[in-house]
Each structure stands twice: as C-alpha cells, then as structure tokens.
Length: 91
Image (spheres, rainbow, N blue to C red):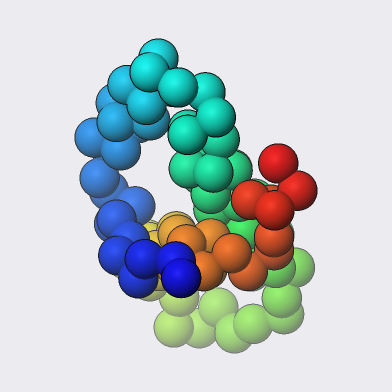
C-alpha cells in the first residue's frame, strides 16, 4: 500500500532528498522521480486547461490567478502521490 504522506509544492528540500537518493541507488529513486515527473505533467495539464477555459474575467485578479496556480500545483502533487496517471508503473 502506498503512503498517504505528500509534500507541499513549496517544499524545495524534496529535490535535495531526490538527489541524495539518486546518488545512493538509482533503482530506489526511480519511483520518486516518476512521481515528481507525473506531478509536473499534471500541473502542466491543469495550467493548459485553465488557459483554454472560457471564464468570466470580471472577478479575476492577480491574487486569484496566484491562488489558482498554487491550488493546481498542490493538486498535481496529491494526484501524483496517488499514481493518478500511472507513470510510476511505466518507469
């Protein structure tokens, strides 16, 4: 069973941890690298979907846009942790 713990998108220390894991054992680091790649891919998909949507710009502001970007980034991390697209199984 997969762990339910996931890091916030603002946790930049996860890259240092990945680098350390990669130096120790590439086989053990592959699932985490696949998870990071999946999170990046999902985040790009969500950003593209937001740009393509026809929405009301009446209530949009810079703060709203920033909040949506932060929400998309965190949602992408959560979905990648759960293996939503299955990149970990492919790699």
